[in-house]
Image (cartoon, rainbow, N blue to C red; front, side):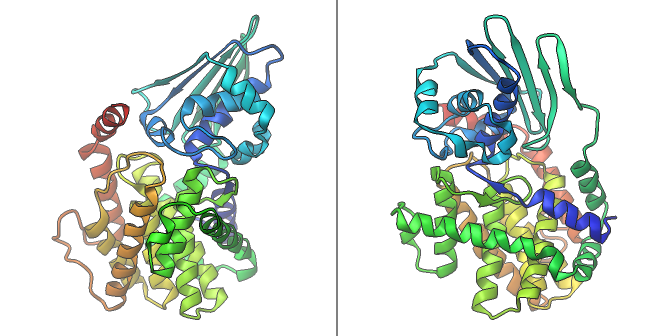
Length: 407
């Protein structure tokens, strides 16, 4: 069980700015750590990633850079040498870095099929030095760093603070999380509104730069949502506020709550608590499904968390919050993830429409039946069923998707 202080601590660790799609950023960050400890000219770069990182990084735009792909992301990280910037390291890309990256030809990317969770291993060779960095489970979680024969970091068997908090969250019931949010002081979660401002700026960027999809939608909510996601995955040089380790998840969660609150004149205090509940539920669902899934977690987790937060924002009770999770389980489960790209804006818009419909049904005490498909009698069991389907029923989906993408 989380207490109030731990809850705020987790939110501050989980809701952070990110520049660019977090999978290419994660690869770049890993190589930046490896490069930072070296003081000779880089001769070659090797990078091993799990299939989810490979899939999500193949087509996503890189901020301040014209091309896409993990080879470029890895090489950029190695030449940037700025791991202290974290998920915003692409801010430092300039013409000098670009020229070095385009001239460099010896970067190899390999898929490590033995790694089922988030995993990046970067190795850099110079004339007399070799460094290796490993990031695992979380996009910024460095568990290993070495230079030649010297081990500089070895945290592979250490549970970091964030992981400990997530494990405590995972043991809670949805109703416990609602109670915890109700106890929060608004002043302590005011920082969550930074995500609203940041992600609205992304949407404005897309409109100002005439990106192709955003003008296709008449609905204000869908237009703003797709604009923000399109801008981010096109390589927009603006940061987004992430949630549960991903910028698109942050957009999918934050913007619908804010826009609905604005249109329906919801008090800011209630909106902030709805945002807090949404972020916590997003992390809760992701803790079961996994960071990088064969299914679209931006919809499965973030849109589901958003739907529950909308019910809360409109004064729904705990049963009704549970109903909307059941409704989303019976609606969007199974949407595949075929990598991070501009088209994700269409997937999230689909998830958002479902979130609105499911929330409205829940507020009218209309849940789908417990006997419907993978729907279960409790929201917790619904989430566990989603996770089981993703990990066991769709275990070969990523391999098939990557085969198609490579062709």
